[in-house]
Length: 411
Ligand SMILES: Nc1ncnc2c1ncn2[C@@H]1O[C@H](COP(=O)(O)OP(=O)(O)O)[C@@H](O)[C@H]1O
Ligand SMILES: [Mg+2]
Image (cartoon, rainbow, N blue to C red; front, side, top):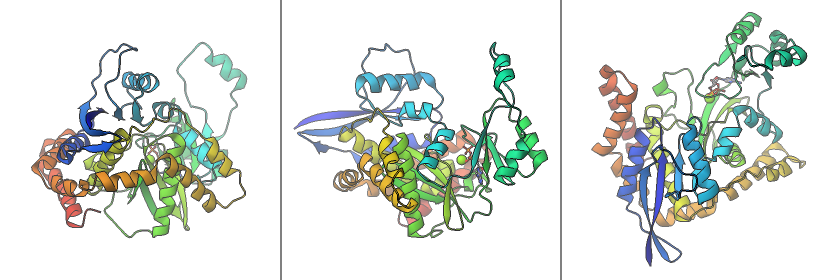
């Protein structure tokens, strides 16, 4: 059997903690996986930023990308790699570039998901351009934001159509505040969205390939307490529902790694934010859930690289629309969407691969997340985010939660 090395590139920005853990655990796993007639081993390297010849080869088999949504040189290098060099990347960079939160709302409305009523508003102000005045004078209609508020019901949310990181989000309770928030929205194209008032659960479902994990989220807590450590806050049926919603969205947009925020009111789950194709992966937010995330990164990366999964270069929306057009209940449609997603993410093959070749991952994770090396990764992230006098306390806080994860059976 020939030994072949799969080269894995990490295309990173400010990430500190998960890559350190990913690299260390990959070493500890010490994999030699038989694939076809070969023995596959793995090398992990961080991708650097530099000029590149469009025709130069790409040394990586797979790149884990955390830059595409804002760093264009890396995004374009990745696109070249997919088009020319058979590179596998998550997430699909064209889909990240083209599909804003707005498109995700529209598409999931078309598939029948109960997305809250949403309007798009033209921006309050503009970058001056030669065509601006004639365009607006001829075609821009004056509108009254309080009319939209009446249609949506008060309060509603005013937020940028492309979302991300809670930037420019306002809960607007009355006419005066609506005008104020719109005046202050500047050049952003905005959505006005009906508020899911009186929800009783706020859940974030993280999806990584076919893997999902739901976390009860507390939007009013301090940043380090928003991902709660609660369990038993919803039924298995609710969890299954959110799993299907998340897999549907992720398969539709070619986002193998994404998270979906959903609010439950009167037993209905309303997805409100699910265009997060570079989701938070920091121990300082995820703490207790962080080891699961690192394992999910490893499993999906190793699987895709080992079997040389083909990068789906194009999005294929039609099969979802074919289901949407059938005379079925939302629950039945969701079942069928999820089946399409599971096929695309090769759920069954993935599970079998993990059961055969990554049997020791849980043990490696348990040992690693008790090690000085893991604690140092946590500390370095805390150092990057917190003022010096808080470093020790917060390192201990997050480390303690990881130890709680270990002590409670590594859920
Ligand atoms: N329709 C809504 N109903 C209730 N709360 C909402 C709604 N839209 C946004 N929010 C609240 O505002 C927060 C930020 O909005 P979100 O759409 O998630 O923006 P971002 O893309 O910046 O994360 C949400 O986490 C939630 O707490
Ligand atoms: Mg959000």
